[in-house]
Length: 358
Ligand code: ATP
Ligand code: MG
Image (cartoon, rainbow, N blue to C red):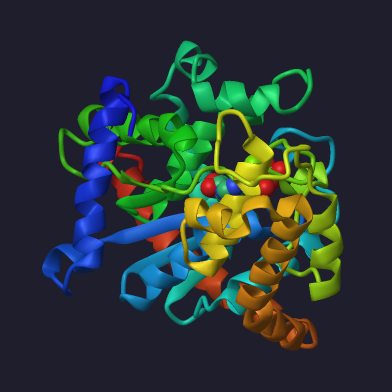
């Protein structure tokens, strides 16, 4: 890993330690872990989500680590004028969670909008940050840049504070993130620390969560930009095998027939190699050397069939779940109930330490 700035370096070191606890034998340290993850319901989840987060969430769950999984519906309107096909999108996201192997009796799947007490935490938390801090948050800047010149909404500006509420309401102490999301998590740590100091006499009402840093690089979409639900450049998990073949064929490559793994000079080819290798369980370098001079068409053929083989079971379960939308809705209702109980308790503590119980 290249040299990182101070806070990132510390976060990376702590992430490595947590990784060891997770991969090690069952232990009290592992029992204490509680993970929060989530997605914005802006469209269908794609292979980037599968590789960078879904698979990993199921692994954590299956190791017995307690997980909260947020369908962040209020965050949909940080950077657009309407909620879009929100019902369909929420259902699609939850369907992919279940198809990927998330067990709703072990992972609490919930939506922002159903948990008033979570959202109420925004008020004390907002008092703990300054507008200058929020404006210089690199993740907010990146998200703003991705909206092609839209004015910054108050909700996007305060995104990191809302995220702090998401993480702290359930006392999550581990948050799987890409390196680009670290500034958000740092903001949560600052909010937890300031809350404890200013409002709780130094008592540890909120733990400072650690990042579990994802090692997979960001998956690029068919147009060469970051694969992203809102850009229409994805290979959705719900695509059929034939659709996947057609989509992968559209992916950008270059004119060099010899396939080599060079992320700097050949980002699109490197991306296909990374995706193919991740689904095959091999390295991008060895996939490249297997393909050799056979060219971009062969690379795409291999990537499409790797995706299709690895996702066959996921897609079979997805079709079953699509046939039973009432079950999917019920999973979400039950998850919301569970999350609400936790949020009520946390808000009660917050009001109590702040002397606001009347
Ligand atoms: P949107 O276009 O609505 O922002 P998105 O595709 O960027 O959608 P998010 O819901 O914003 O998805 O991201 C949820 C999580 O999924 C992120 O924290 C990130 O870790 C992961 N993720 C999203 N896109 C990719 C990608 N292209 N490659 C790897 N991981 C990704
Ligand atoms: Mg995004």
